[in-house]
Image (cartoon, rainbow, N blue to C red; front, side, top):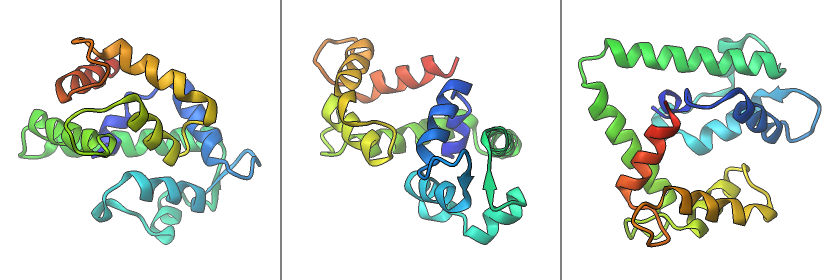
Length: 164
């Protein structure tokens, strides 16, 4: 489900993710490194074993181009599954957005603050210590009611705007 939403990522975003996943800086993402992030972002029913990943990619590690191919194939497969299913695509997207919102709403108050955004992105390995200002800017940019945090509707608008 998250892979469907991940199709909004640009090549630049994917390159940044690749660099973060490549923890040993060898220019390759090992299946262990890839599986580590998949376990953090996927619910337990969606996780892959290392053997399943290896059978999918037929390699023990991926360079950037292979990583892009892996990402695109999973995104394409997920989108095809969603189009062919009986479930209304909009309902599934809404449920995915609610689940994703809850990941960032750490205290469960129905809002995402810049501190919560920063905490989750750091935990996923996508931010370093100096990126707090970026999170504040992102919240301010999409905070249409100017209360300093994102409610679900503002979060949904942000996710749908960036996917266009």
